[in-house]
Figure 1 (tube, rainbow, N blue to C red):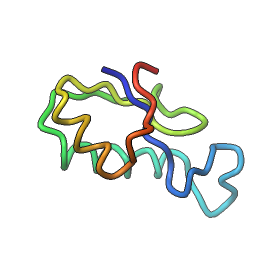
Figure 2: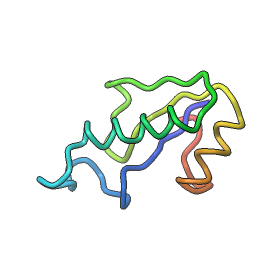
Figure 3: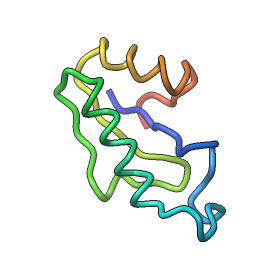
Length: 78
């Protein structure tokens, strides 16, 4: 299953401004996924998108954990 996890405050890449580094924000999201997901999961540099980070997860329990933080409207099968 593929989900799109949004950047903080629903910022998008071109509008982040100088205070945000898109790759730093993406790494923060991946670190969170690594902490809460039992796996397997995958996300790399090519998964950094304009509205968030694409993450491939292999367990529906992981989807539940991500929905706890990012809400039930995270886009599935991006």
